[in-house]
Image (cartoon, rainbow, N blue to C red; front, side):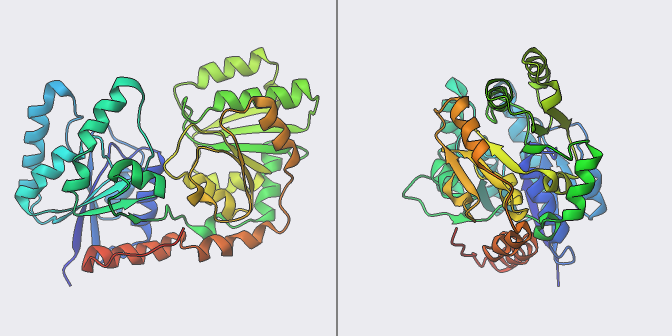
Length: 372
């Protein structure tokens, strides 16, 4: 049987959520039947590049889109399609300029799948400019996927049909493990602490700055000293956050771990997870946390599609740090954390199951159906 070859269009293969989802998918899909080539908009090597090549995939490069280089951008896509004419499927995750490269792909009889991963992008004039670029996608795409109801509506419109695809994970990897929990609490000298965790890129959208305000309330206002915040991830605001932690005398109550490749183990030592984000398409971390049996305190702005279990507690996005802090103080470590793995798996969020389903779609165009 001839391999099905699929172009996966992304910004870059860094350590973001989309990239992690795609590499999870590629590691579990039958690579004897399906081959991926990742079209990236960067010249710089990224953390997944070597692994892609080890899996037998390709990395194809086009320039980053700028208004001043639109002609060069268009030419690069024509060249890419001509030189890789054995790829007849294109799965598009970078939607900001997808209307350009999808239009070009039609000259080469390529079937396009557009995958919405977010409910919104950027702010101000840039947001409206991107929306204008993205509007034609709903008419150009052959197939429309979305990670949540809100993400689908945001890109494709309320009256346009789309297929929801779960942001699946390796559920076995995130199943609660008491031994790992004990070892990691000892490793980070947090054995007697109640750990509030967060995983994600440090930027204004994720509101890690607000989480520090919550810790200020718990530690300095309520005088509760056994709570500790652990942040996993890098980003442009890290120096400002460190300065703020020092100013509020929270050094002994906050730990920044930066980028880690052992998230599943670190999550075992958390006692709860917090997500006050302004918006998210579908935060995979909240699937991982539920699989690990963690209570989660999340923003009211986040999709309800993420509610796979009873572990999710929502707080209005407008509420002050004191309200969030008091809600955090009510949450205790979940009993029988190991039981939640099966619940998450039964809802269709296991990457092994999804890999088989998408392999069938790439081969036979058999659309999956999910109820989440």
